[in-house]
Length: 63
Image (cartoon, rainbow, N blue to C red):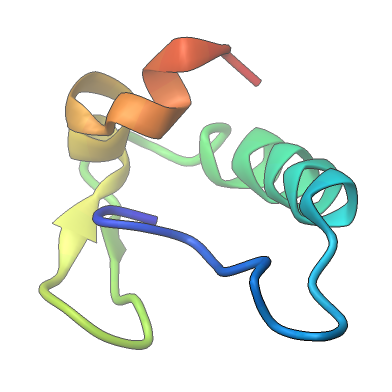
């Protein structure tokens, strides 16, 4: 989530499918309490509340 969520520059990359998947995932995640910790596959832990407020990509279009 925070600091990125995927790449589309690989041979099978597909921006449309990535956005579709992200939209579906964020809808589920943002239904969780804001103090819920999220542990991404890399980087630092974050919370749902931080992602809602600080993540540039999720501010562009609310899911």
